Structure formats: C-alpha cells, structure tokens
Length: 308
Image 1 (cartoon, rainbow, N blue to C red):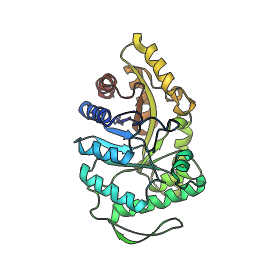
Image 2 (tube, rainbow, N blue to C red; image 1 turned 180 degrees about the vertical axis):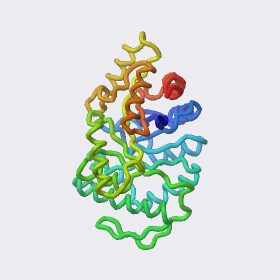
Image 3 (cartoon, rainbow, N blue to C red; image 1 turned 120 degrees about the vertical axis):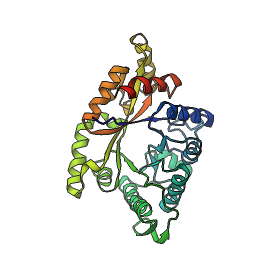
C-alpha cells in the first residue's frame, strides 16, 4: 500500500513569523510532506489575538524553505479577485519551484466579512463565485490565458505569464453535497474533508464517487484528503496528559477529535492512518495537540511516517 502524504496544519493564530518559520523548517527537516496555513483576516472568534496574513506568510515560508510543499486549508475565495489570485499563484509557484498547493473554498466566517466591509452573500452565491474562480484558475494554469464570461467575473483574453513551473494542485475543501462536492468532481485535484465531517467519511466518499460518475470523471484522478486532530503521545504514561490537552484545545464538536480516531501512541496512530488509507485517502493533514512542538513533529516523523 502506498504511503499517504502526511501534512501538518499550522494555523498561524498567535504565532510570530519566527515561530511559524521554525515549525515549517522542522517539518521540512523531518521529512513531513507539507505544511498548511489558514486564511482568515483574524483568528475566528478571537479578533484581538495576532494573526499573520495567509498569502504573505506562505510566500515568506516558501522563500525560506527548499523542499516542503506549502498551501492553505483553504483560501477564502471572497478575499481576492480570481485574476489577481491566478497571477499571485503562478508567480509564487515560480518563486517556490513548484511547491505551492492552492487550496480554496467559498468562505466560512461571515463576521470577518462584515467587519471588513466585504461582500458575503448566500451559500449559493458564494458557491457560484467559487465555481467561476475555479474555471478561471483552471484556464490560467493550463493555457496561461483567461477568457471567461460569468455572472460574477468577466475576463477578456487576459495573459497569465509566466505560467506555473508545475500546475499547482487545486484543493477544494468541503462536503456540501448540493454545491461544493459537484465542484470537487468537476475541478479539484484534491478533495479535503474538514474536521467537522469526520463522522461521515464513508457516506461522503460514496457521494463523491457518484458525482464523479455523473460528471464522467474517474474518481481515482482526485486525491482524497482528510484533516484531523492528532493527539500523539510518546508513551502510555503520558497519554492521559496528551489527551487532556487535545480535549482542552480541540474538544469542540467542529474539530471531530473523537471521530478522527487519532489519539494514542505511535502504533495506534499508524493503525488509524492505515485505515484511512484503505478507505482511499491519499493525504492526511494533521492538527497536532500541541500546535507543532519540535518533540511531536520529530515523533510524528520517526515513529509514525517511518512506519507507514
């Protein structure tokens, strides 16, 4: 069985740039495949805690690393015009030598839009804008040119040069069966299942396969990805404290701590990742219970990834 790609999700809320760079470089040194950031203008629900801007941070991290892939889980489509985003992505991919992953979604926090004076709209409207952005990005990456007339965006014979050094994988996050998952079936290279849907994995996988069949697409051409909280203990004696910290930080229903099943020592984590791999997931993106300490990252690399 092929080892899944293992990524670490490092939401930048409360971290300095130096702390983010340290964690990212540690991931690279330990052989972890990817690092993922969030895309919020401030930490959801905690506006007074410092939070670095997502695209600027990714640019700096890619410029100061050499091998690791970096992306966002996921960019908010509401924040950037798709033509500007296409230029940003192709430029950053040139800088990073093909290590950018482009995760994108329709937007999730209405309050930050209201505070910033940005348009929000219904879920249908946001999904329509996302569909148009995905079409624009697809053209830009494939043809180095955009020509598109939609309800929300009109682009006329627009050059995107230089194009990417490789086509950045487009990651679409979400499990909405009416709007989001049909976009996955049509446009995504990677489908990411958020933490709040970990209890519905088998059902959502079956929905995606049905949508791919309807769209005439081979579902094996989409990498299935899942994000989950991992509470990794170095030994059985420390497991209660590790579990308690995970429950304190990630015990809310939206994090799917129990549904994810990634609580335990390294052998238990290896077994659970094996189960997810057998379900067809080729990418596992992990919150760590202690927000990316050196000890946990090294343990993940040496006792989990090395054993998969």
